[in-house]
Image (cartoon, rainbow, N blue to C red):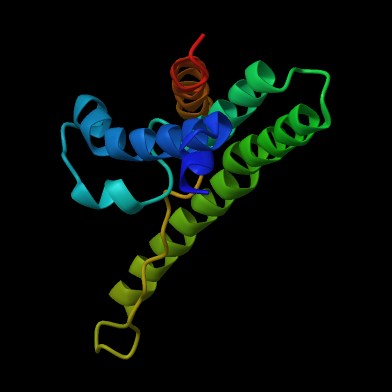
Length: 154
């Protein structure tokens, strides 16, 4: 079973793309924000989108191992579309709402300096911009293709 898992190009491609994208986030952040933030290794949001990289690597690998006319590819492509829509739409909107709520919390804190109000900051980096998703797509394509090529021995 262990050999079967290690020979599963779609699984290895998806996992590798996810972990590489997650690993790259703090280093890419240095380029854009001039700050290295270790916690980005384990957080959502940021460049590149690890969720996008993972589902695109999975879909790409399935396309090459099973074919684009298969049910497996249809499932992976549909799953990828949902994940990418969620990353750019719903989670991004939730992050913007968190920014507004955090600002209101700061204002309330200033009004109630006696300490009765203690704001708890909400996580604002939930979703992804188009460029972050595009970075995930490109990384996922490269890893999906190269990993599948290596595992399948073509």
